Length: 343
Image (cartoon, rainbow, N blue to C red):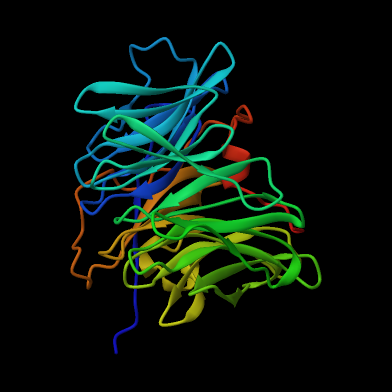
């Protein structure tokens, strides 16, 4: 069998200092965010010669896009006057899900997984609260399958636990790897959930759950790892700390084995360092964050030998001359980029 080799597309951004791609549609469009010149975070869609700033012309001060479907509909979270609003961008219009909410993911049916004080599922103009786990007071939705299953996490009487929610079974707790916490981040149409779980040592390791059984996906040599995306073929992506815990690399779990994505890059892309992978579609295209010339860029990884082909988005990487901005810590961004080594 041929070895998977990825080419890197620099997705860029509308002109700020750093960018990240968090989700990818079946057509290769990506949703994410860029840090602007003043440190503000701007929700963007990458999918053409020029990325689209979803906040342009609005009164929202900051935002991030975290989900996109095959119709180009986008879910995300914006801020107005310091208050978060979950939103859906669709066909040039915007649906506001209300104050103190966030919208994490959207599927091709137009369902949206989001959170207020509790995780919820939005569909056909109505919000259904998903509740909490026994002994808990809050829950957060992070992932959504094509058939409406939701993955997330919340508090319980025993600590923070991941969950998977279905319309038939409701909210089902995801077990840990022997530690005190677990986090569900994505779910596919087969019901396989991925995220992270604390081991007996207290560190978080990337984890998959099938029929309630947790599997430790391991690390790339460091103490901790986290899975963020899964497609319907069961291919998983995320990031892991390397030996010494000084930096992270993006990984893919292919045929059940965790592989450093940097070991699979084409020779022409050897200048890139893929530090995190957040989303993968059914064509095997991966989006995340890469470093090139010391700068941070949203990236798309494509295997030219796959059925997905190579989308015409972005351009060849060019080393930037500006310095990375600090950026504001936004609600949800810290949750999705938990670089903490302990659960």
